[in-house]
Length: 101
View 1 (cartoon, helix red, strand yellow):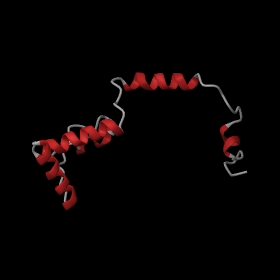
View 2 (view 1 turned 135 degrees about the horizontal axis):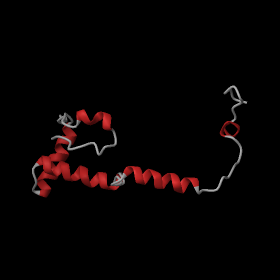
View 3 (view 1 turned 135 degrees about the vertical axis):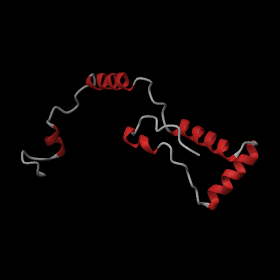
């Protein structure tokens, strides 16, 4: 089984997209075989769909335009009220030399 893409999250890892999986866990193999039997699918299709379903629950969909999404995020953050006007170093407790106060 190969991965189609890494969703652009880690572009530096794109050269690893074509690696096949070699699962040596007997438990994972049993679960995959059971899922395939219950769904009437081959193991690869059953695993692909199971992984897609799980990803849809745990990972929010990537925005179509990441640059626009980031710009929108930073715009929303810039509109938030300043709750503590002190400099970050004062809040964190560091002096001018970067040492804890």
